[in-house]
Length: 153
Image 1 (cartoon, rainbow, N blue to C red):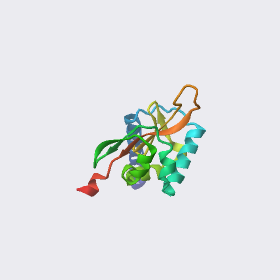
Image 2 (tube, rainbow, N blue to C red; image 1 turned 180 degrees about the horizontal axis):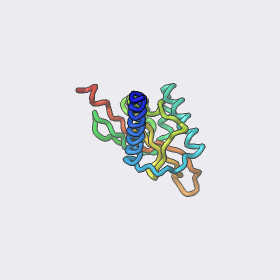
Image 3 (cartoon, rainbow, N blue to C red; image 1 turned 30 degrees about the vertical axis):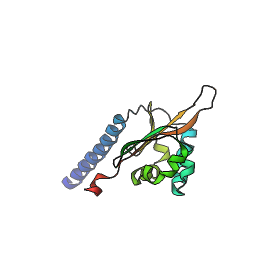
Image 4 (cartoon, one colour; image 1 turned 90 degrees about the vertical axis):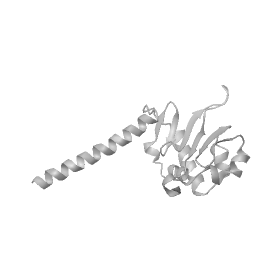
């Protein structure tokens, strides 16, 4: 009986620690439980398809320019056009960014006033219109392509 109680307590502790870590990550990115729209979910699905196909043109045409991209190799770089994005696509979209997009659970997306983030803030999306008369669309507004530091050391 003691072993069973001990195992239950270990399980409860592990589950609460995992929930606490997820909660802390959400707070770090300003999560407010804002509902994610159908269009935003469809955008993430299409983004995943584009990443699987390695379709840099599709991705580049969904970016809000200029975009500032964080890179541990080059600091911050600013990309001003879709053609420059496509040209530098392999540098811009690191393995971390690719994994964040490909492993995103569309039913568990988190949205804050800053937008929707995938991974641990590796890529940020936002619904907006460029002009008051334009329809609202989903855009990629931030890319943090941090290279895994443990692999570099």
